[in-house]
Image (cartoon, rainbow, N blue to C red; front, top):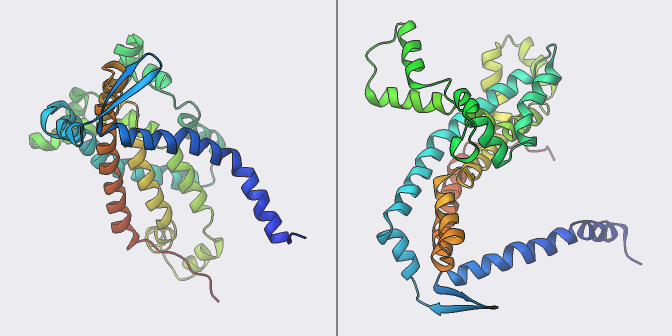
Length: 299
């Protein structure tokens, strides 16, 4: 007879068996093929695929011959560099607010979670006013509500003058991307909410008895206890930004494969991008892990 523990394990494997088969057939096998194709000149004939081994030529062409590829790669890296902390900080700020008791909290949570439900390329293009893909000029007016002129007028109204060109460029870039930052924060807000609700009420009561302010409670209790989720959200945000459909690098790779029909060259472009993303995620995880607080159960 099979023991109860082994039977439960078999139930688990049976539950994920379809996912395992799908992952093998539709992920690992294509992944292996793309790796092989990246070293080949791929031509498609009727009912057959011809591979001609050319070594590292596709990789060399992408990095040294094609200037558009390196430019798109730099753009993707810079965009991810400044968007990731903004999205994580904004998500944490909204999650802290939504974790409070106030009227209409359920509606507010639903509003911030809507992008997760309707986060598709066409819907985002229509709302954000991508005229080239949708022809929607009305939405374009919405996407430019935080234009550069409006930011400059607001700074002048607040009495802020004499900012450097670089600072004005940073402020303008952030203000012009407010919609995309909010749109990309749904999952992160949900994870932060779940983490905040795991903090025991006894911790707040003890802090209040000790005379701790809300600011001290956040930095000395809340922040350390949700630090693992900060790491998770940071990695998730990095990968999400790198693989976003609006990313120039992703569009360049899809153009090479599906438009120019350069399967070998497009595979090499994708593998270079994959390795860069993997290195960045590993570096961020290694740096942030040393600051993450893991609560250990007492033995």
